[in-house]
Image (cartoon, rainbow, N blue to C red):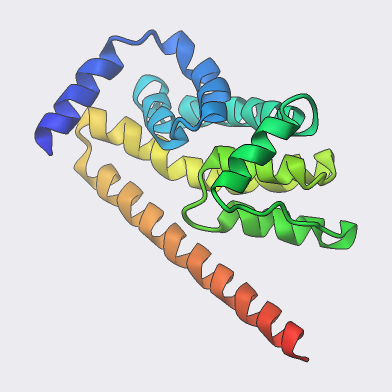
Length: 189
């Protein structure tokens, strides 16, 4: 495990910090894990500026993915998702905010799948951004703080960031489970 972190540190040190925001904005469009980029933002910029850099990059990524899913990449993205047996939801306008939030908090769905799915579902762009970015900010905070702390060797902050991310996952799973139970009860009646 230490070899992994050592190689990660060496790789991270070889990257110019100017490329972190464009990397957060562009690489997740192709399935690159955004969490690694958020850790790098924390490493290079610390927690506060790292969050600013991360959120700007995430907002740009969300915008680009939405635009790609609504325009010329719609067909290829639909075929990609169909191969993975991912169905594009038909979302009524009155349910958009709730569905956007649920897709954002559902554990395990990569950022690019979430973004393309919501773009393909033709959700309102303003709602998409206003719901997505705050939820993603909470998610990003744990990784950015973890990134800054791990490379500075701040054990207490590392432990806090890990517990924050664990608590966030637990909370999101509970909310997701409650919503599924509510939907099943509603469908049964």
